[in-house]
Length: 173
Image (cartoon, rainbow, N blue to C red):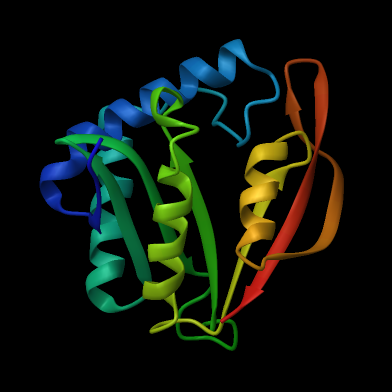
């Protein structure tokens, strides 16, 4: 399996949209699935607006957006965007990553995260992220790359009738 980590491009929209659809299906079937979802799956137009803005933020230097490409299929993506561009928080980047369930356990998340950290060093001084307290695999990956936990938000997410704590991590670059 050949994995290529590359910058996101306009041509990736359909693959990113597919990744998002799979994400919602997985969250519905696994209550411990590791990230928050909107209460209603976003429309194609809303997703396109988000995607276009991410690419514009990359061009402006306010974001990093990388794709894990496995033989032409988008297996995952990772992005970091400035917490607040043009402010006293502009040195901090908020990281989010998703690897499609069909590709997990193959080292793709590690490669994607490593490349994102390298790219982020050119733009940010610190990265931060939030992860479900129940997502042991993601927490292990982040800790292995030097992220340190700095807090827990109890009952941060309400999925159905169940609450899930959110843990927060940072990495000094």
